[in-house]
Length: 170
Image (tube, rainbow, N blue to C red; front, side):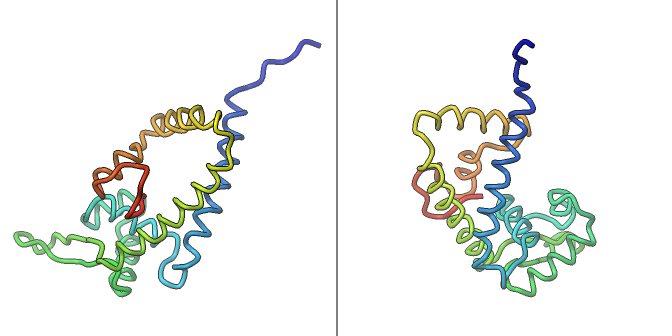
């Protein structure tokens, strides 16, 4: 029986699923220190607000892919916890702007920095000769998913590129 050519799509999907398990575990551990402050879903909300620099309830709900009432309940809890501020528009009082408070921003930065450190520890254990190919593959995957490149997001949000982080990244 001739050797069957490996199904690279299936192999890639399997490898990405394995990688996602690693990243989910890193994410869960990074949230452990703030689990009494926010849930995973609430943290995702904080990250979206961090990335947008503020937004409306409708836009937040769309970004989270939830209905407006679900987003409203989430925002209520985050406002009550002092992590999000809410203010009405100057010209249209029905328009409500949502933004992270300093405390909310600190939660995002603290959790993200912890993730960055743990991921860096894992990357340092990878063979150096495979890192460039891994970066290219992950970038291609992110591009296919239409996800902005991390360096671009960091530069926009915090004015620094990947490498020497002082603030944490999304």
